[in-house]
Length: 334
Image (cartoon, rainbow, N blue to C red; front, top):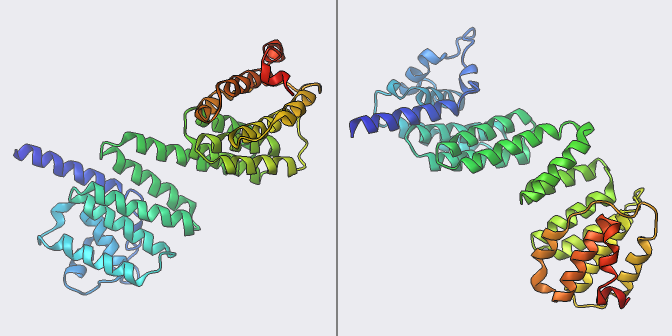
């Protein structure tokens, strides 16, 4: 029992130590040239009430997180927590020191083995940093710290997701990689990572990268996530984008309108005619995968409508499938 307790304690110390891997709280105390406190006397200053500034409180939290053997009093943890929580009340959530204090609290509770509470503190910090921070490096560091906590709380998938987001953040600092980003977004779509894929496509829109096609990709995501109305908004934006639309995109835009008509139980023969006309244009066919989307909305379609959509989607990707399309009664009713 004792060895197990020692093992858990050492693991907690390792985790909390990693939460301060940037050394920021201690770096603020290292110069000492102007008689400012240093790590060697910070705890003494703290305990004797000689310096209980917010900066010293965060430094003491870092020292405690690194080495719980530096505690002589059993109530040291509670005292530093109370002090840090009071600091939060004085700071604005927009301030950098507010999020640094949240991270310090996370390290303290992680040292005590409360990883779930530590995750909560760091999640709060990360949300605020994304919303207010002018320091991208803060976001990167907090994301990595949170990933460490998830790994040690038996949630490796969440840790991986966070690190993937971090890689995406880095990639999005390089707009020249737009084609590569689009490929990543497509891969994420097929892995059902819709939030990440949406984020990339929204970023590509800010770059004005192949607008009509990008709007189509977003429409596909919104159909998969139960936002049909939002999907159709993307198609309207695609028509209005005044983009240099490639010939194969035109029938796809009509295809989404066809889905809209089917879902709303409206007549769609005119849309079928528009698709047929668009397919007469040169280079109107390009590889396209809509099976996942069609199967997702199949419960709202008749069997014949589902067959029409699946066959039409295949045809838009390969003109050799046109013979299969012409055999369908619904297609021939246009």
